[in-house]
Length: 317
Image 1 (cartoon, rainbow, N blue to C red):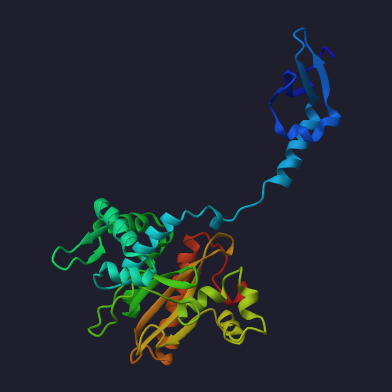
Image 2 (cartoon, rainbow, N blue to C red):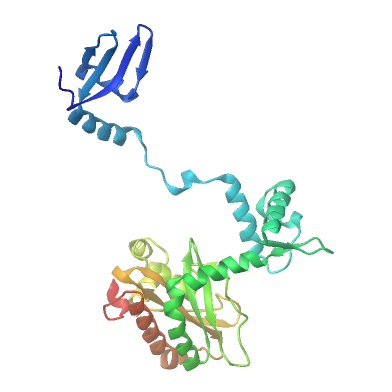
């Protein structure tokens, strides 16, 4: 066999007990080998190139299991992020013992992580009390993210007009796992106002913004509206109306109303939520003064995000 252009060499035998294996997978294909022995009595083993390509593709499909994101998780990084997230969720400065208890992590590990973050400016330590808080580096990286986030870039100018028109606080909210995160806010000029909710997270099922994100999520629309789900009828109503309302979910005496934001292909990007005290945001006021401007605003923002159909959420089902 002089012409080997259509063949690939798998391994060679340079001595009786020494094998130079170039492709270990070839051991499964011994019946297809072609053997050539040169003048130095070295044995070479070849296989047809076309069969080799087929075999590699087939072997890869069988031998390489798919892996989800969690399988690549690094525990040390997970622990570090847990510490940062815990610091962001606690309003006051905290001691190492508090973080250790909250995260079920030993104090030595917490201390080492905090010391590393402190060196990089992500955490600050109060000298007298020894308590910790988030540092300027954490703020800076958060601001950089927000400045580059397409949703905020497109939504904020339009949301500012809505806030001026209804003179109530207006939030841009997004889903974060099983919670809704209030990402940005345009505040009201009213003397009586709600303490800022920016950076706060709430369960999806309890708040108007969270319920909207659940009801219009393409991946879960069948789950949340199926008859066996206790809240199915409520989510069906939300999908029918195109918005959701709540009272006291964000705090006692607080009311809110929210509608969804869509992008290209109907992708759900988030929600716009009007928040205020119940005595100003009654159901009547919401229906007569808030709802239409809110839906108009969501329609404008959605078009900027790539949604080119008429903005009628109840027709997206």
